[in-house]
Image (cartoon, rainbow, N blue to C red; front, side, top):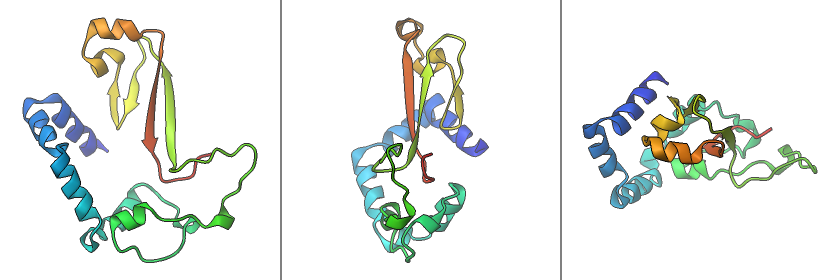
Length: 145
């Protein structure tokens, strides 16, 4: 977690990091990354991803995944899902956080702590959003409750 924070701070908070980030988010790099994740070379990522995100695989079809993308699009076992009037069906599991925006509130986004000023890096723009709401959706591989 600490390394992720340092990486994020480097990528977003330094000139060199922003230069690297600009390259990493270029569409051709993104497409190349997607192609690599479709190959069998990406299978080694699956067990580490499962461990890091504490994924309960008992709710999914038990099989070997041929790539990370194959794992990422895995299917749930239908009988495991409990559906009732209080169940929200989602195409993916995740966590939605909604925050009231005020000048004193700190927000934890991707393991980094922000306030509205540091997030927007513009005091006039920050004032515009005071009293409003901010939402953040993070993908989470465990079931929503």
